[in-house]
Length: 223
Image (cartoon, rainbow, N blue to C red; front, side, top):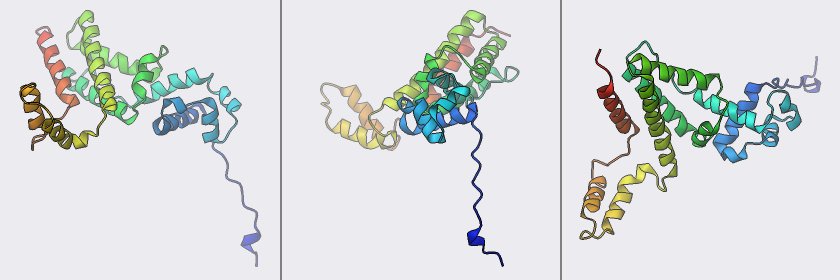
């Protein structure tokens, strides 16, 4: 009878190193510790390899940042230029905002990269093509895209900079109202009282997005 306890254990094979694995490891570091934590050494440690072995697949940290930007952008839904332009752009913007909330560090990284990858190029081409297909001339397409982009990135950045938990907005508004001189700031007090009531005032990304889309619809040339 064979004693299984004496059998030699077969060592588990390590997954082969690839660019995808390196970028996924960098994404994990950025999400858990912030973008400042991403370095070739730390990526190597996470993957249990020497940092020098990473250079077969990436040229350095700047290449990793380019790759991270494209990974996050791959989570943006690309609008379908053959569909309803407004619904498609809205869906795409909402998905982009959600991705930026999942990766709080990503907004600044995406805006700083000069070498867009295939996911970023597909997203940009889809957005521009959808707007142009809706009837906007190219000048208006550029302006519309900037307005949408600014709202998406700006709103996510503002959310990340808040000094309070949005879920505690009612309590914060109530405390703010209790200490606000009514004779000096009557409108601000009224807003704070309203925000502390049953209908909590919330900063909604889609509210501003729909305002932009409504304004664009009014600019759109008649069929």
